[in-house]
Each structure stands twice: as C-alpha cells, then as structure tokens.
Length: 290
Ligand SMILES: [Zn+2]
Image (cartoon, protein in one colour):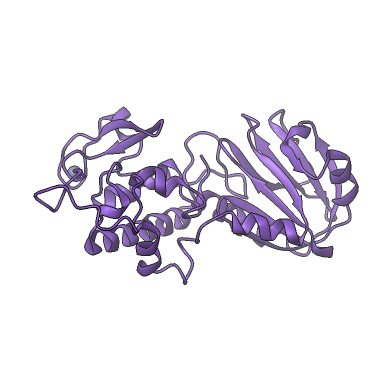
C-alpha cells in the first residue's frame, strides 16, 4: 500500500540522513528475487563503493541517485519500508536488504510480504522508468488543465483510471478513495463525463489529500514506517478508507460509509455525497469520444 505520501516521506527522511554517504557493503541480501535488474551478481559488483548524491521519488519509486550515473530505485509495493538505523540495530528476518554506509549506519529495506522490488538503473533505465509514469500530482506543472486533459474523452471509470500509474503517478487505493470522497465523485463515474466544476473539485481534492498525507508522514496501517523507522500519522485522518470496519459515518452528512468493489479493489464511499449522476438530472453525456 505505500503510495505517493509514504514514498515521499521515505525520500525526505533518507535525504536528511544519507546524502553524501558512501555505500560500502551489501551486508545482507537474502531475497535475490527482489533485484529486478541487473543480475544479483552485477548488483553485488556495482553497488558497493557508490556514493549517494541525492534522494528523490518518481511515482511510487524511491530513487537514490548515486555517483557514476547509477540510480538505486526501490518500490515498496504492499508492505515495504526503507529506513536508516544505527550500527548496533539488528536486522530482523523481514529485513531482506541491508546496505552498510561509510559511517557504519545501515539502510534497511524491510518487507514482510516480499513484493518489494529493487533496480540498479543506468541513465537510460531511469529515463525509461520516468516515461512509464504520468504526471506528478504535487508538481507545480500539474495544473487543473493537465488533469482535465487526462480525463477528456476517456471512457474509463474514475477509480481505475486514477490508479493507473501511466495516467497519473503516485495514487493508490487509499488516496483515490479519499480524493473521490472529498470531490464528491462516485468511483464509477466515467472520466469523460466530469463537468469543469467537478474536474476542479477533483484537482483540489487530490492535491489537498496528498499534501495533508505528506505533512502527516504517510499512513501506517500495518507495515509502513518512515525513514526514521516510525509510524506515519495520516491514518488518523481518513474520511472514508476503512471506515466501514469501525462504523464511522460520513463527516459531511452523517450517512454510513459503504464498501464496494471496483476493479477488484475494496472501495469506500459515502453513498449520499458520491452519487453516480450527482449534480445533473440525467446521465452526463459522454461528450465527444475524441
Ligand atoms: Zn456524505
């Protein structure tokens, strides 16, 4: 589940702790299938000795920019977290990658479910990774017009479309549900059917929900930890996600939150605030198919 806010938190926390440090050794790698590229043997040969010159994020990828043109890209997938620890901190059995730094601290990649993935990319590999993702929703260049252009003419339902990383980067199940609730949009609405006002509401919702989650250092449901090994706080601010379990009603209208399944994903909505044809008396036209 780590999504944009969790990976952004990890990137910021790592940036504050490891920029300028050298990776002197791969101290532990007990799950080689996590290394997607290059081969594990090449990974062992290429990584030690590299200096960390920057830490950032693209979509849900954590990116450690190394010297000599390499980038260590880590995807946390379902249950991963990356954090920095002092020399005397033992790695538990769920820590599958440990990188020793030149000041003896360690970077841990902890992943209970082992779905996380690591790539050591050259410049061309990094360009490819970048090109496979849509715009960054918190970037300055992501405007309401950019979102409108992404939705225009698309016959896809809103939720699966917003989950598609090639369309828009960084959103996952939690933050799509929260954004759609905030914008009062039903997840099954067709993207092309949104009015200008609804697009504006969705734009505001996505930016607000993600910004707030970054400020709260991400959401910890079970496994996610910040770059300092701590829990995030944003799970305390959910409006719909998981609220069917605790019986918490919609904070706007008091209606019970309901759970549906959209594209095989558990989806949480307020059935009063998020109606399929909200705001119009008839199904919104699919405008032009263009
Ligand atoms: Zn409501």
